[in-house]
Amino acid sequence: MEHEKIERINELARLAKERELTPEEQTERAALRREYLDGFRENMRQILEGVVIQRPDGSKEPLKKKQDKH
Image (cartoon, rainbow, N blue to C red; front, top):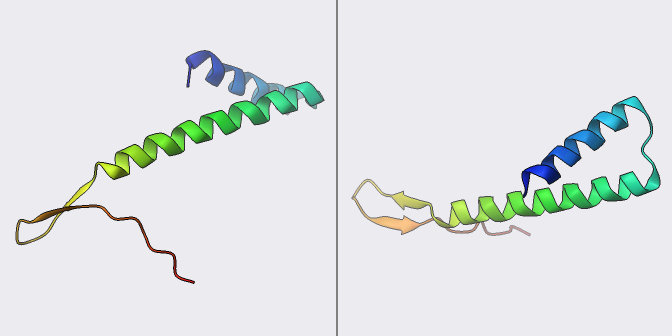
């Protein structure tokens, strides 16, 4: 995410502490937050896909996704 967008998120957060945000500002803040979180999640996913587990016997295997237990 671009630095300017992160600065805008912070600016809107400061404004929200001082006064109530307008509906347009609330919509903008929600969209920027969503974009930030989507980027963060994608970055974390890429990091985790690159993780390799090394077993005591020296073998290596990629990290696997956690299985849902239902």
